[in-house]
Amino acid sequence: MAELVRRVACAQDRAAFEELFDHYAPRLASYLQRLGADESLAEEVTQDAMLALWRKAALFDPAKSSVSTWLFRIARNRRIDLLRRAGGTAVDLDDAIRLACDAPKPDAEIADRERDMLVRRAMTDLPSDQQRLVRLAFFEGLSHSEIAAHQGLPLGTVKSRIRLAFGRLRRRLGSDGIADAN
Figure (cartoon, rainbow, N blue to C red):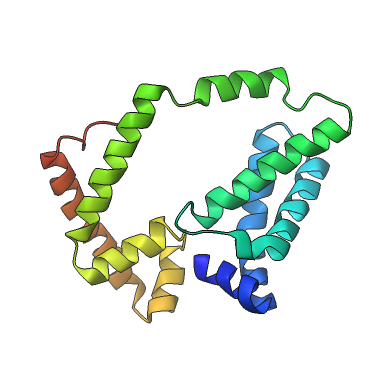
């Protein structure tokens, strides 16, 4: 997905944008509705977020976040902006409670960072083909079918390599003491 954003940023590639739109627009709308937006507002905010992607693709930094994290943050912030402009409260009581409950605790943030570091380290021990497929699936957000097409591999091969990678990661992370942390 990051490659598609790069193509939008560098060449205003419409096909890349359409692929991003088709993948993310329904997910953004669903997310916004779960936050309490009605269908109309969810669609408006989704359109606004996707337009921001088109206009500001060059600002995306894959080292800082995934495409999905970046887009969902844009959508959330646009929703808040629209609610403020409409004179309503930016966050309703249910959202405030949900956000407060979902806010990471300092200890959890430290544990998450340590776990992320251990996972990244464990990923380097994977064979390069498994590492590449895991990155495409979980950092780029591609489906197994998309990975198969992108890599020119049979779908079964993609699934088995990812399953093997998870087995190795599970064993490695288990020996580092975090496999049961969740």
